[in-house]
Image 1 (cartoon, helix red, strand yellow):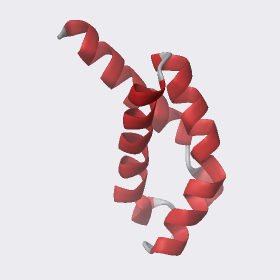
Image 2 (cartoon, rainbow, N blue to C red):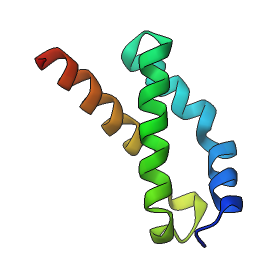
Image 3 (cartoon, rainbow, N blue to C red):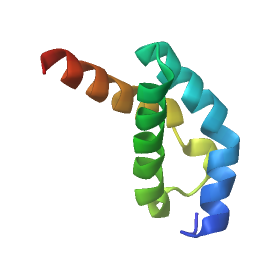
Length: 77
């Protein structure tokens, strides 16, 4: 997939509601979920050139990893 704003918007439109739901389930509060959500999409967009087909994006793994990183880091702080 070509790195451009169209591709980013397409991915965002396709996965944003699912990703936000996942983040909310992990954090139980909207401000933290929004931060994690943003971090997850930054990771996706930074690596968009590696994505060949939208269908191969494992968004939930990226979202889960972002959530766990934030939740476990804040627990240990």
